Length: 146
Image (cartoon, rainbow, N blue to C red; front, side, top):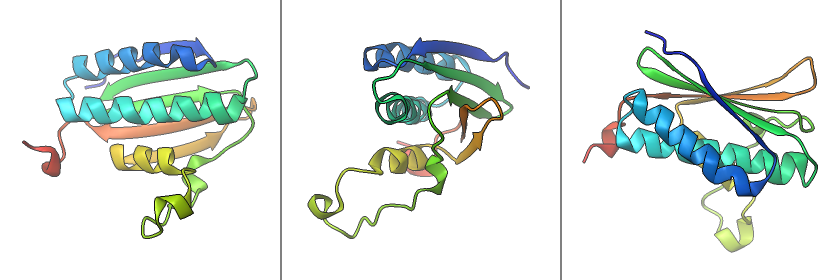
């Protein structure tokens, strides 16, 4: 069964991330997500929104829109913005065999999103905006059962 979509829109300001995290936590928990799943979804959305604000808009104004719907046994999260085109799914995975000081910090947020969610999809919209669609099962992953 699909629940009604819930949405939040905030200006591209890092000070608004706590509001986004609260929203995601509330919606994911209300949908019946396992506590570890809630934490993962909050982390993934926080990373996505941070990237949009810090790198996409890079100090310019603009909206960050987050929509969440429970669709059967999974959460579907849509993060949208109007920043320049950027497809996080096209980035190569960082080489974790290279020491962090050599590898640098870039790309780690996207790695965390990939680890936290079951699937990431990107679309450049005709209106010039970006859409990142992330899905995650409501259930805890086997390695998360404690």
